[in-house]
Image (cartoon, rainbow, N blue to C red; front, side, top):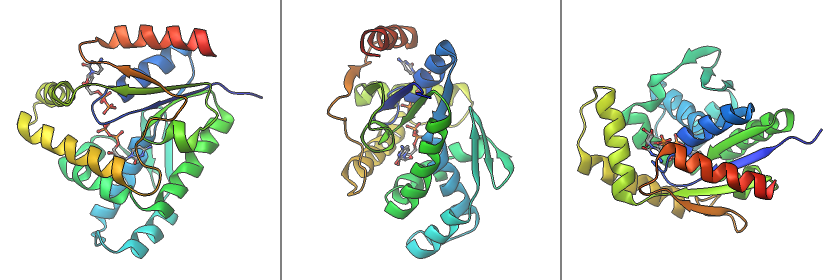
Length: 218
Ligand code: CDP
Ligand code: CDP
């Protein structure tokens, strides 16, 4: 059976997960947040106090970890986890961990398996280029760094977390740099992806544009 595949990539704070989640609901298909998988592995590595430079040990941990993602519910070794993977510490280290090709291959295999069995909207950094190279529709979401930082700032304010706009901007810039400069499966727009600059656009305006593209290209 041919499943629908919609790939959404882009830098941090571009609105990927918000848009992908809403779009999947709208189309009544599965949402796959691949960033949550990288975050879950990073969380486990930090929790188990594995040295961040010990690549062998990190790969061994990745091989022995069971990640189950059902929409927004993530189970790490059969334990339900939620906000832990969004901590400042996990956010800081995730891009370092995500550079390791062997670790990526393990997660990509899992992501491909989900897309083999379901129609999906999948968001991440390498979905259009690596995970789903034959996706029906590929979107590369961007927005200015100021707007992306401000979106994160507002999000954290709503969660009553202490925030500093400049610190958030710096952290996003650092993560984007590591993600786009890594050797293996970097953050890059797929040749056949459609770039959407969402600066100044509301969530619903972005969704509307993507639905228009889907109907045109599917
Ligand atoms: O939502 P946010 O932009 O904060 O990031 P995320 O989507 O949760 O992804 C966290 C990190 O995981 C990214 O900064 C990347 O380092 C890594 N990641 C990746 O390398 N490849 C993916 N397909 C998804 C995430
Ligand atoms: O997944 P990614 O890091 O690309 O971004 P996100 O977590 O989906 O979005 C970051 C924040 O921006 C969320 O609080 C969204 O509600 C908000 N957002 C927005 O204000 N306007 C948009 N067009 C898209 C997202």
